[in-house]
Image (tube, rainbow, N blue to C red; front, side, top):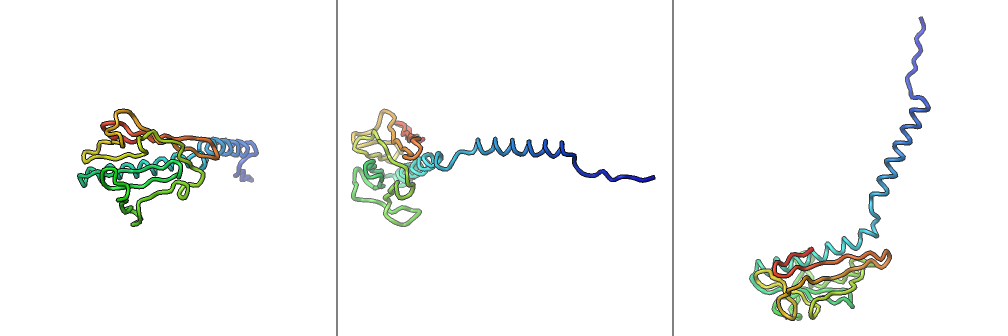
Length: 165
């Protein structure tokens, strides 16, 4: 008696497997956002992180810290003291002056606008946000844009609680 070894795959089985793999890779590529579309959100998260740092410094050191935003120059600086813009602090992560130029860090991202009075956001020793007109009583925003895709992201500072999102 002769036994035939029919081990292997049929052409139909191979076509089905290749079709499934192709479909799954197509779906995966569609669901992964491009880097250029994520860039504005990455920039937003970076700035939110710095604003939260300023708020935490105010709470932990029981003194006023603030951020001076210059949308036209695409930068912001962090200072210590009530509207004391000349007292720029040292960035704890870089050990340099805490002045951030958005265009240098994130090319193609622009700061469109801010509705902070005096382009200033500061936190008192309780972490309550204020601008040059005093404690903020409406949500304040900083709007960023990706110049290549047109996508925008908004940083919102909630009054009284200081929630930043």
